[in-house]
Length: 253
Image 1 (cartoon, rainbow, N blue to C red):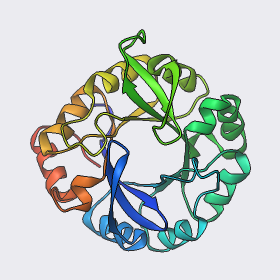
Image 2 (image 1 turned 45 degrees about the vertical axis):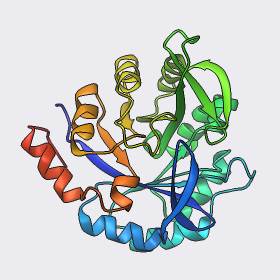
Image 3 (image 1 turned 180 degrees about the vertical axis):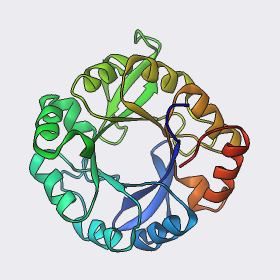
């Protein structure tokens, strides 16, 4: 393993609260974002994700007040996604205290936005997220979805990941729609396929349910392990996860 694996709890937000759903729907409350962020920092998280899950479909910007509140209490880098549609909205989020921004639907609709953001902000501040679902009609078997997983695009997920990688972003974050919140394991074939196709770090996201799932994602090539439900609802402690992975010979931050 070339680099230490990073553990990244993700705070999905709706109406200023942390929530968690299954397959992007069936949403339930999981707490206050600043309180959750502080607790995760104390527990040993390496990074945090903050995702405003309805900003894009509601056609508005990210909740900057929440970003500011989280920035005041976090001691680790955090990435903010949802509603980042241009360089200006990304700059506002970074000014509010975020360390990085993540773009998904806007980048797909206008790929040159990725280049614009890399140039204006620096590549190290830009992550591109890709929501994927299985579709046997695609060459890779995976299709890109946008608008919070609501809209199929007809684009092959691995081909899109290759295009994204060409813009020089350091991190690509694919989330399996089938796995999201289901706790049945990460979608290992898509992690493996994207990892083999790109030079960027690949985040495992969508489906963690037990300790073994995280190890499987590392074996598939993920260097960042993102989860929400298992952390939010106390099923897995970050310290326990790190101990487990170290015990399996994985280098951890």
